[in-house]
Length: 148
Image 1 (cartoon, rainbow, N blue to C red):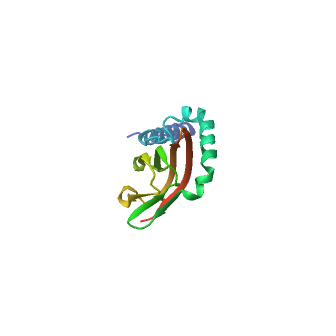
Image 2: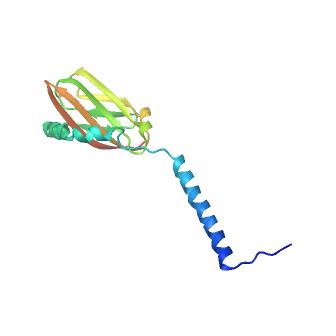
Image 3: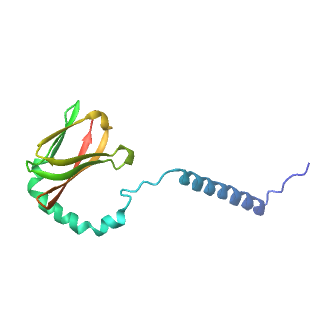
């Protein structure tokens, strides 16, 4: 049996091979994780951002009336006391898109909406409330921490 000579060339070749294996294993592992963007269609939403600013300005007077309360067995959403032609309340979970929840409103004058706590998981949600009343659009956004 012949012994390998451990000169600097042999050591350098082994080091390069081990380094390439390490790099390729990192590339393989990174390709296995899904890429979750904050928004799927972020470019068109970026272009329409001036409209969102106008909607936020319209809703500024209703900001204190919009509240989300975790009361143990259910989540209570208090909305402004206005007639809503149509609207959405989106519970956006930044960490996992599968935990998002959407509540659609059509022609209602409710001031409170009760949602079961079973649709939420412990963690942070960004609640986005869009509505339209008399051809005017409004948008409010609040953070909500669900604690079971």
